[in-house]
Structure formats: C-alpha cells, structure tokens
Image (cartoon, rainbow, N blue to C red; front, top):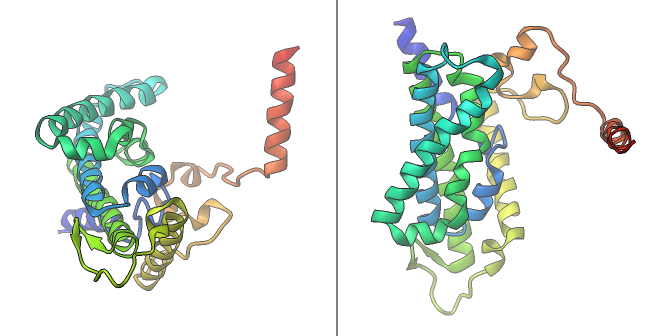
Length: 249
C-alpha cells in the first residue's frame, strides 16, 4: 500500500507542486515559442512527454551500467535517439505540426526538463517510479502549455484550435501572440500555479536559497549538507574575467 501511495505522489507532483514549467521554471524557451496556438502547444507537449517517459525508463534501466563520469553524455544520447524517432513520426504523419514546431522539435534533445529528470530522478530510482515520474511531469508540461496557449490564442487571435470565437466587431489583441504577451501570460499562470501549490501544502515560491526550491526534498546536495547558496553576480562575473585573463596569458 505504501508503494502505491509513493507512486501516486510521484505522479501527481509534476502537475502542480513540482510543475516543470510553472514551479521549477524549466523549458521556458519552447514554452514561450510554441504557445501562440493550442495546436502547436499540444503537439509540443505530447512530443516532449513521449521522449521524457521513454528516456526515463531506459536511463533508469541502465543507471547501474552507465559510468558516473560520462552519465550526462550517455543521457543525451538516449534522449537524442527518442527525439529522432518522434521527429520522424511527426514528419511522416503530421507534417503540418512539424512545420509549426520547426526547430523546437529537435531541440527537445537539450530540453532542461528531460535532462533534469534524467539526472535528478531516473538515474537514481527504479524503472516503475521513473516511468510514473515521466508521465506526471509530461502531463504537467502539457497542461501548462495548453493553458498558456488557450489564453494567448483566444485573446491574441480570437480563436481556439483554429476556430474563430470572437465576432469581427471585436478586434483581437495581437500582443498576446507576440513575445511581450507570452511573458505576461507566463507570469500570470505561474503566479496562479504557485498559489495553488501553496494551498495544497507546497513550498512558497521565493527568490534566493535552494531551500525554497520545490525539489529541495529530493536534492542530493542538500541531503549531503553541501553549500547551495548561489554566488553573487558580481563575484561570478569577476571569477569569469579572471579565468579569461589567465587563459589569455
């Protein structure tokens, strides 16, 4: 019974409490780029979810075989293989969707959500748990894209899934399908998701410190007592400049 409860928690966490887009703020680039219409958003969400689930399963199955020092390149190879399969299927059966997604479909290979779940979860847990985690995170990603795209397409084009809903007398606000509108909608939906997560017992979203991260409970660095504070921007910039100078000398 405990195992079922654990798997249920792994499944539901990706929908609100640890939503990869709205709570962990991963995959922002494809989120903003593909949410101008619901059709492209659904296509991107399903494609990424399939790659996430399949890569989680394979990486979890090979977690004891993959050497620790080359785990990231191995993860990328596994993810790239599934992205290639998905891209070929989309090109063969849904060519219009392939044109809409453009370069963002093959860029799933370097999507932070998929690589992040491989590193943070699939590489450390069982196959079943990793598959459930992939399904939950995939649904959370897809739901976030659908909600954002519905708002942007309705207000920006006056339609949903290509069907016009607003009368011709009401002009759409095209800024919603442009970059500024994307960031505006992203902020509003993120605020709502954070509020819902807090009402459900999730951690309050705030800047600074890893303890505020929704994934803090499963972070290996915090569990090992390692330093987690992000260095100041000025210090980081100074370090980079010094490294460049040393390399030039």
